Length: 231
Picture 1 (cartoon, helix red, strand yellow):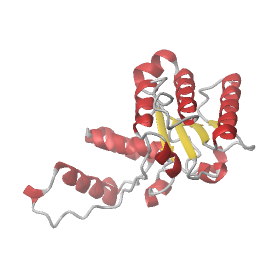
Picture 2: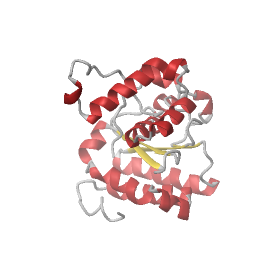
Picture 3: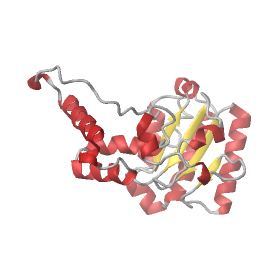
Picture 4: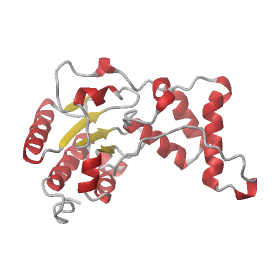
């Protein structure tokens, strides 16, 4: 499931008669107004956004913020909002390069080393760059990972964050998006990232099972079986 870059720019829809505005348009106006006014002057903080989503009762609001978690970390398109919600923290990056950054402490040292080896072998064999960030928003290096990992069109940024229920989120490079079936990412998240799965088996198991499925698919993305074997 490729994570689209999110944009919270105000939507201009006021020229439409009220009866012609769709529910989505009316929601956009509410979002724009809330963001523009900062909820009556309150600063737009990560906690403020969380509270706004909860208070609104809108599923779409929570989905939107879930996307912001991913690449609080979405690698482009957040504009002014990203600076206000504190999602660019290079101080949380490790001192030495690694394809796995476990800010949340979901993995043991042994599990992390096994994932690093799997990722290294996968990149050597296929050229695909799988990178994994484990976080609890807003404790994340956020946009700082883009340069740290040199994210490009062959990179899959896999963010594990349980903040909004489903723990698995993906930001997929353009080349990967063309070569891997698009529904693959949503299927991985749906099977291994749902709340029931990771709460029963643990965050670490959810992450490891997802990596296994991803590795199998990326080794032969044109083979329908390789991208469905573990799903």
